[in-house]
Length: 198
Image 1 (cartoon, helix red, strand yellow):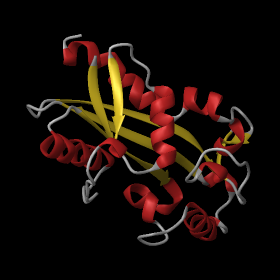
Image 2: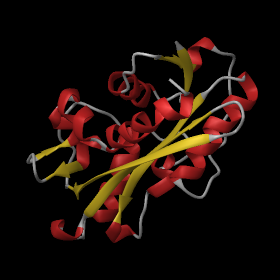
Image 3: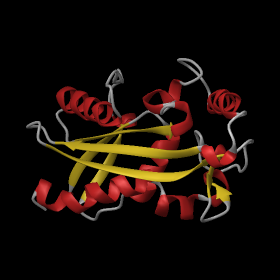
């Protein structure tokens, strides 16, 4: 059994990763099992932030580590909130505050011009610095109001035309089979056996 540390303090993200990522030879560990770790997300891309998270955990705890960074990209807002998705309305902003700021910015933009996508970048790094990466996207639109109680982050305002619902209305079972994070983790999973010599 090989341990991999999932480097996130975001409980919603952690739950999704643990729900999605099942591999019989791998045991996922969480930061709860380790001393406090301070990770500065100062990269210029989702990949750089995921890489930084994995690297600092490997360097600090000497354990194979998984870093993940994700966010929402709205084309009509020149890619905002982007890598600042979690702190869009301020350093300690809540999901509600971030959603309200985004809704305010797009209120004059017609629905058909509110194309957006979620992106997830995942890096798994070994103690020798070698790593694999995966990336996933989920396309949709930003609606006018929050709908649904599931998920977290921008899920209540992210509308998926194929389902006629927001991500927050879909429920975990469907979300965890179509999400950007699911796609990125499946890319990682497809490389893991070779990467870890399983």
